[in-house]
Length: 419
Image 1: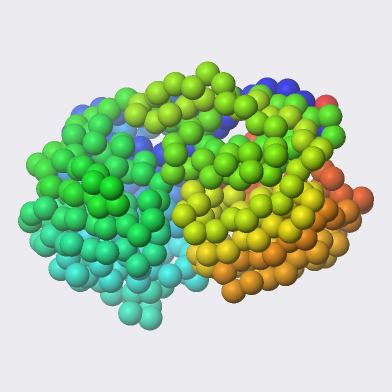
Image 2: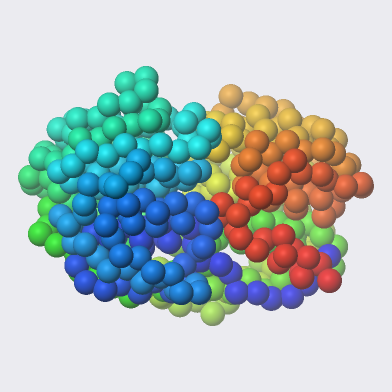
């Protein structure tokens, strides 16, 4: 069982953005509760290579901003490691700066599609070269002299949207980006606090170019995507009760809470408050023996896309059939998460079927131990570590180091809560 309370680590999406926006602001920035995961450290490394003074002290990061037009040509190739957020968002910034830069990443990044970013940046006048017409790394960006854009997003992606918002800061006049479905909006919230001229009208985001952004002190709230693993572990493990403190509750990210409630899970929101424009609160989660299945599709998918692997584990412990659809985006994450989740849960004895855009899970299943292939995907590794809590036998993961990408200290935390 899981018992206790803990303060949640900083949100990965917000930590990335805090570094990027601080780097292109004017003045001194302090970032508290920064996520010291490998992905976010890759973002720091990229901006250091462009002359930004960044110092790390404990869980705080101090950034001396170079200003909107003050970045220097990189001293080396910009290596984003495993971070899709870094490569996509930084592309928007590089497109606006008058120098050449080259982006690379690890093997996983080399398989993740970039034309969803590079094509609209080209429409803004940016010259971009790369493998398979700049769909894959290495990608070379020749920045500067951007035009405005009026762009309808073909897919729901906060990363693509954010890249275009950032590029629009450097454009010649107002740009508008239209979403089909609202994706996480941390960029819009945080950029406004830095002084960006940005406003949101339903599913349209309007951005006017500005001369400068201005420094901020940022307190990063806890990452609900990271909390989701502890939430599910608590719900399905007999006798469990855990308080998770300082959880970011931005409405574009709380799909996991809605799903848990639909499944009859015992979860309460306490101490709700506003921190730096983001809604934050504490979650009290208790073991829930009478979980039921639900359907997950359409508008809610962008609000929980990263949580689907662990939601699939949760669904194996629910009565009835859970159907997950409209989640094709899972195929182009760190792994093909649809196939990996289905294959691994089958190994554990789950009644699960792969769909083109999701999966069907029939519960309630008794899971058994198995050797799990993670494909070095942090969310796969954590999801199946949670499955281990309720299975007969042991789950053996082929890689746990990948967890440090988003949740350093996760394994230690699970052990402490399991005492």
